[in-house]
Image (cartoon, rainbow, N blue to C red; front, top):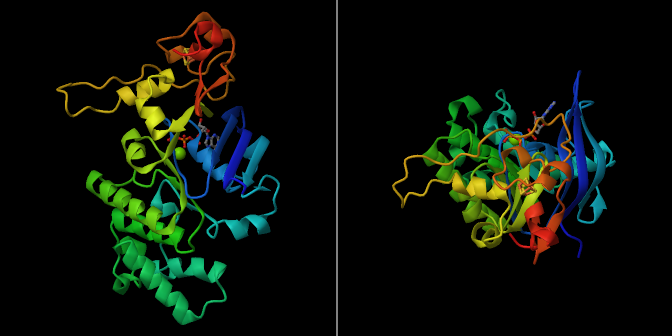
Length: 327
Ligand SMILES: Nc1ncnc2c1ncn2[C@@H]1O[C@H](COP(=O)(O)OP(=O)(O)OP(=O)(O)O)[C@@H](O)[C@H]1O
Ligand code: SF4
Ligand SMILES: [Mg+2]
């Protein structure tokens, strides 16, 4: 059986008036049916760009896939016409966007907006069947069906996000792209939404790419993790490999050091010093060299290759054979 998603050597650029932004660079990753992958990395790493590339929703004219391949269930998506993509989006692949309000229409009731997804993808259902499904999914995400005739502005931030999740899941997609689904919410609501996502992923067996800055959420929710830096997957592995193996990419190590350890009385976290490389420049060596505490001469001259340690992938010169193969 083909993998659900297989991305190979993807390069995505934004062409602005005065420059080219190298947002995604030679990025490869894959996902099995039902698998949950966490995509982690700091702001500007290219996470949203990757999700938009899968759905072929990059901003017109500005965003462009330069090269590479995105296969969904064995079919190449790059170059497919809009008709083909319309059949996939919302039906087989859904996306929860970073800001819930970008997905909700303020002038339409929440019930109608959920119904719209069914109208588009399941025209064969009767009106009664569609209404029953809308009530059922709203209840499932914790919104009383009696409130379906209300408008988004009558809902709290957490409730709006629940509606967005209902819209994303009502067609029972095979793949859910969840782009920071809780960032706009306060901490208690964040926990409730993640709990809801956990229940729903089990109920529907949906494959999920969960995009987040939060490694703690990834540890609880995901099977696998891809750590993205400057548009590249610098480390990939199972949750155990990423958190427990002693071999780690220095950037991942930095991210893990940023997680507060409540059992210790530490007053300060250890943020990663410096900033991500300018995305308008292709570095000659490793993209993390400027910030890396282990940077060697070769790191400034030559981009590192990906080392495969039993399926645990690390893009770093520390793992080159001449450095002993294992750091
Ligand atoms: N429409 C655009 N035009 C030009 N550059 C863009 C555009 N959208 C994104 N970029 C740039 O592409 C790079 C990747 O952005 P992207 O939004 O994919 O990052 P991200 O990892 O999702 O960040 P965040 O965590 O802040 O959401 C950044 O340098 C960003 O400034
Ligand atoms: S390749 Fe060199 S600079 Fe890059 S992460 Fe590894 S040790 Fe650090
Ligand atoms: Mg983003």
